[in-house]
Image 1 (cartoon, rainbow, N blue to C red):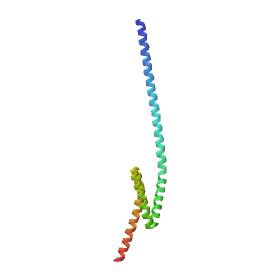
Image 2 (cartoon, helix red, strand yellow; image 1 turned 90 degrees about the vertical axis):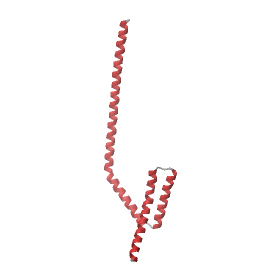
Image 3 (cartoon, rainbow, N blue to C red; image 1 turned 135 degrees about the vertical axis):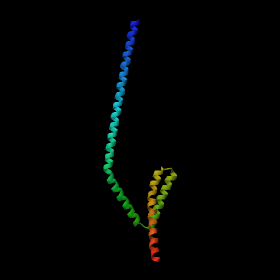
Image 4 (cartoon, rainbow, N blue to C red; image 1 turned 90 degrees about the horizontal axis):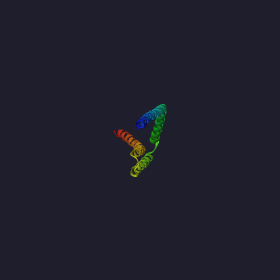
Length: 136
């Protein structure tokens, strides 16, 4: 009977060693797969960052042109148009705020109202300065 239990013990030890080696191989394999995925993700991020960097000057130029055009149109518009535009924009932003929209969205909605308001303030400042210089 001792021979059987010794051979059973040897067999159990061999199976345990094989199982442990198999688990280590699977662990190594999982690490290698995870490493491969991480390298792929990093490569994709690097490519995306390169694409963004290539397109950034064009996007900045387009944004600059759009802002310049909007400024030109606000300068050319009448005071009544600016007042109505600022009021509508402010009302839209207030509605978003009351409706529970994210603060960033509310802030973005306020940008046209602020721009139109600043244009109106600038106009009134220029009018005051020009009439004030005539009075002297």
